[in-house]
Image (cartoon, rainbow, N blue to C red; front, side, top):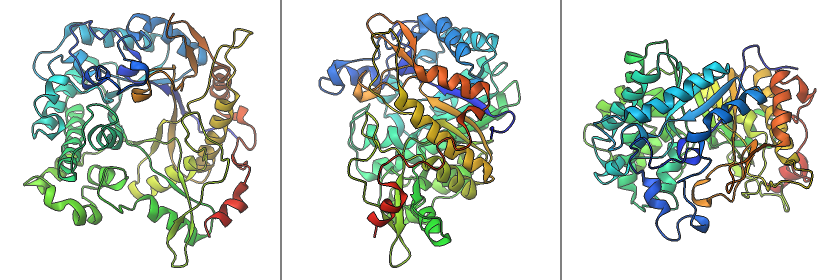
Length: 473
């Protein structure tokens, strides 16, 4: 079985993780530049100063994309490269780099999907209060406008914000990512509100100013709970668990998606944090909810739940010796079935998988090649589940593997390799991994090379479905 005609096969990266050139184009510092210089924050003292040196090597990287056969490439624009001070003056040299990159992609027959914000927040704006400042949404709108004015004659596909749950939780609650804050729930509530408003203002800006008909989405984390059985009661319990908000905090789905897609805060959120919302917050809901064309989901793993005695979802005990990635994340391919299904049912939008992949222990073998069978197996299992979702009626438009290149993995530095392409960070040599050739064949055949199962029915863990089901009782 193949994927639908026109299915978008891609891979993604983000600006700070690959670009380097932190002092070129008049680029201003970001919160990540400052965070990387704080002792003890990044493994081995690594920084994104050079990363994959993509600014200098983008032509070769695009040639590798073409070699793989990518139909689309998800990139992000660096806010401080475009607006060094965060607002106000625009860097012509910074925008010119993205001009060249977009032109190179189009010349190779690759569609650019441009993410406006993937965490590299301007340090100058952070010093003015950052996302806590009531003006932060307007700052973001002005930045989005500058990017759209420059690129929208050639770029049609836009993603406003990547993983707001992560940069808010890890960056402003636990402090493990930039800017390294540990704020109380009142501040987090206002940051979430300003972020959601920024998304809405950016969507409106793109609609008003794009020079070609725009397709717009955003890319939150898709936090998925999958049922271990398929009875209606088990499915409903897993759905309820997926969209539940059980405690104040940013690690959930509905606090982020309901306002921008449905135009309302969930009752559970209002019950927990309404007192912390800014005055007049109700008026902002209309601006937050702007029509979008697709919902991007970043899904790497998910939880498994069984049915409790009262009909509620009960987390299933993780199997002893379970399958895990190098990051320690559980391998749960069914998340790419239930996630798209549950989110489409709730929000009635086409789905694009904007990130999916794994960190693996990759190195150059004696034969000069990089063999990564785990990545191939992981991706086959997940694509099999995604194909199953499509077969069951979920409108999935595309899949972006994370990542194109091994890159700077935030607080992990360069320890975690997610790429289809191996990067020697000392020499900047690129070596396409075995998975890149495998993915090229998946793309060439539009998924037919996955075979009749494609991982749809094969449990990743030796325990299997029956034992997993028993583990939750």
